[in-house]
Length: 222
Image (cartoon, rainbow, N blue to C red):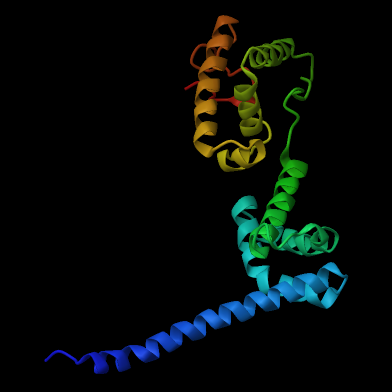
């Protein structure tokens, strides 16, 4: 038997009240964060601590998604808190929600960490000099450097960051501002071009010589 309009209206009332209460809670939380931000911008450390405590889980999860290391993510999350003290004055509420802004700060901290720990200059490849007068190995190193120098800059950068700095495609994408798909494409084309150039120099990898030209790029040929 269908409910009368009045019965249906009464049944929906608790749901509407719950939704209204939820909306009001969100508004109250937004006002609380806005007040804390204003106080923190005036130098109130308790307000800053409140903001950090409120968003610390979000910051940690986001940083860990970039650095892929639990302990590093914990340390960097603390560093984000320290950095907020010096940069929160630049936050403008009308431009972006505070959480989005603080995650941007966290991203910059994580990227700086990756650069400091693992970045190798793209334009200058430093490979340990061979010991014991191994002239053949020295020649292979020179061939590798020369072959890399013939690649387009973007391909060369991706190969060096991938094989010398040890960054993952995701980390390289963050480092260079490119999409992860474009990094995979540059890596694939760069490997093929590098292999072809090494073969042209009679310094090809294991498929054409007994040993690859350099251990850091072993298996670089497709």
